[in-house]
Image: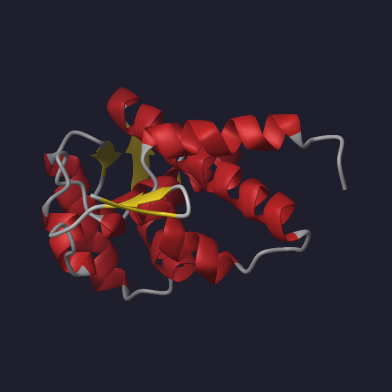
Length: 149
């Protein structure tokens, strides 16, 4: 390991984004996370989500949303009809709640850090690569800087 200005840089650990994703222990893809988070968001409002509304919210084709929802169903994260009402299972709710909270923590962190509203696109890209340790550190930073402009 190299140390540069108090930051440790690991040698020989570089990968492409896809390489990092394939190396994830849970094998839960970024796309799956986006779907679960969106289903959670929509279910929180009315108790369920609809495939077409999920597709529209994520800006994907309905057929793509249907395929992903079938995959999430096979993983035990959602219940529902192929083209109808979708509900999260208990495991899906836990995962969705975590993903929603993670999104909000990261958004708040970068907004506090930069002093400005952070673009949603950036948060959506970053959130998939933040681990629990870093997320907890971000949350502590927010708490410590809550009363500061």
